[in-house]
Length: 380
Image 1: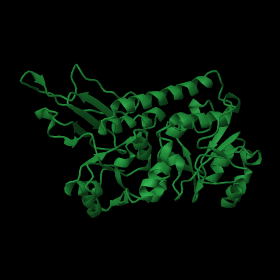
Image 2: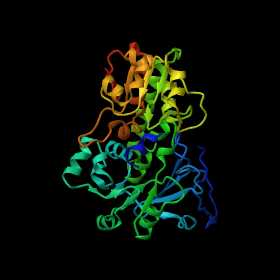
Image 3: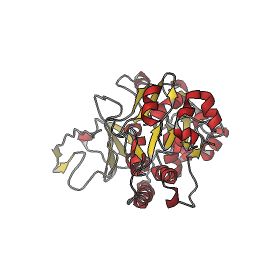
Image 4: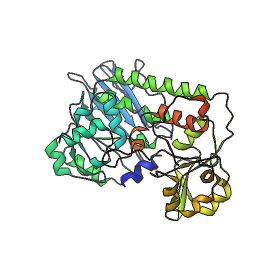
């Protein structure tokens, strides 16, 4: 899957809770004294109780047939009998393995990166802070997400492995659990709301006993995102925008309810495929794209292109777009880590406020005259 998975990185939350009473105490996931601390994420719910926390993950992959419930048990915490059927994880964690680069910023934001003991495809990590731990041998390369090295993981003995599935058939995850390893399925990649994706930071706050820190950090992101929205509140979406590029014989455009399309909507731009229903992407022919987007004011190109000449070399037909002639092409994927990891894939889900500011800087530069792009680069 490699980088392609994270690029696609890009639902309704379903719960089935069973309650009962024992000794006049409610043994339920929720009660009158608890509420879900999650506001934006659709596939995550966190209920904090005295001595333990209930985490539910729904819609972990497309067409998922079940949800997952985890009990985060604190030292000396007492878990009700009715919840003991769910997977229990002792917290705060001291060691962890994560399998997506999007998890790395969450660890670093909470100061928990030194708890990371393993990661698949370590070359994909672009953060200098975590790269230093990898280079020092403190974070081991544990194979590939679709085929993790179970023997090595058993030797590392992490307290938890956070991973993801892509469909209802996940033999790798099942093998990890059969080996006695604790596994938590994460679904941040299924979120389409920019703030919903970032709110998964709170899961790591719960795992590392840093709920307050996570709440403060996320509140700051929300504030910055809303401040950026306020900048463009009176702007009209007049600029037309093309998104994507050719992959083999198709051009994949982001659908109208996707994570990418939401940023362009929030930045007050007229994304040409905003009316395309659904999330994810749709493959179209070059002719179809050219017919609709030849005169687009801007082009957000996918791929790590560094210049217009490099873009044209990849496909000479790209020069037919007005955005190529007018030099109004940008990419968010050009900044790379020391070993080839893409900064945008890793950091952008955790910092949607910075992504939105980049888009605003592209479409309405007069609003952010002194702002420097975090991810975006203009092709010259």
